[in-house]
Length: 216
Image 1 (cartoon, rainbow, N blue to C red):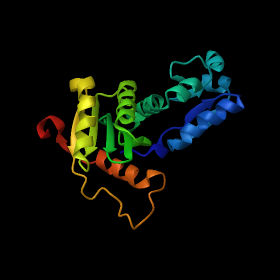
Image 2: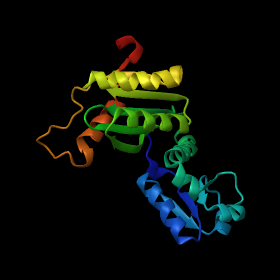
Image 3: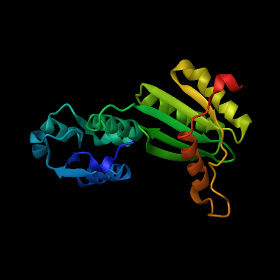
Image 4: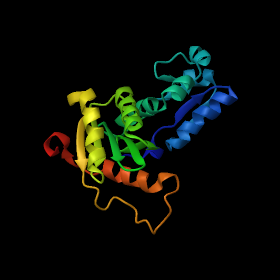
């Protein structure tokens, strides 16, 4: 796993206060450093990643430009593309999209790209979980896509796995993971905002499991 703080800064090239706030909020959530330049300055810079507005992109006139509207509409896929742009700074690295799922009454989801957490989600139904994960798998480009599902509720685990497998076939590897040791002890803290579910999902994402086809 690489250290994002050692990356060259992302260039935020806009004079729009509203767009600037939206862009920098996403970059802060990624722990990415950013440098604020005017569109004219950005056009002359050596920045690897530039984010601007559609009108100001005509001034920047570069290939490596992302728009604030893209970031707002497709935040996860744009976050992943930004990370892809930085891979070369750390030598050869295996790009992987890994989704960890902690099934239960509340379903915790952790989405990792290159072992960096892009997002964490709590959902309340299998249908919404499958719909959300299907969207993530379809919208983020990655040579390897893995979904790891905890075995704490096998009926739910197999239901989620079956739905995803029927749609994505061999495009996605689905694993069932032993959940032992992934949960925070209930006495240590309250499960505010699904903290325990999210923590478990993230641990599940990092733990290799058994291929789902072999453990039906």
